[in-house]
Length: 247
Image (cartoon, rainbow, N blue to C red):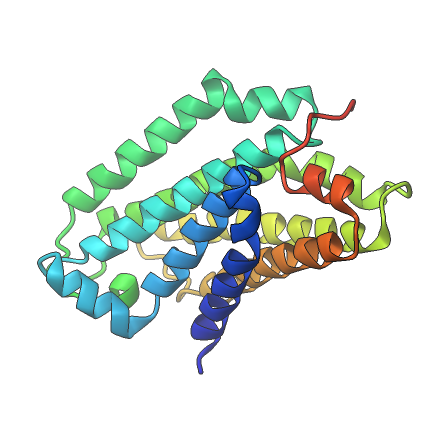
């Protein structure tokens, strides 16, 4: 079993644990975000990727779908956490005009750069596609909105880690989320370096990206364990389902 397959399996388990609350009308944003993230992981596995992409014409449209699902996943992560304990400034940044404009620009440019590229050789991660500036720009755009959400979330989430009034388990969950969001931010400029002619970083951002995904899923598992231990109110805030608390 590869690391990606293992992460996909963990994502599926987390989805199953969240399903009862979804059926009660709770935790919708958290469930949708986890679903989109898990589907994105599944689509990154070479075998299903090739099958799905061939059904779509064999031009790596499956990779475009993966990018759009990841962007949507971070949108729902932002929605959930913005309504929890991020504070008014972060809430306005994510849900207000600035956040919506950034989201629209990222989606538009992602589709544009993909359409301008030669994507005829189907392969997971578009590894068989010739190096093109538009492909590099397309890949970079896939990291812009997640980094935007991360920058809005990291400061209040870091404060949650330091909050002694919260349980130790939920502070660990917040720490995992801070680590994941921090990696998300750091990988953007690394990949963006490849927009400079002649620069090739050799995909060194790939491993940190999967580490960040692992931290996200570990945090989700931690939330479910905390809920099992009876910390429902604090978990609701962490999961983005309680009323905002004063910041």
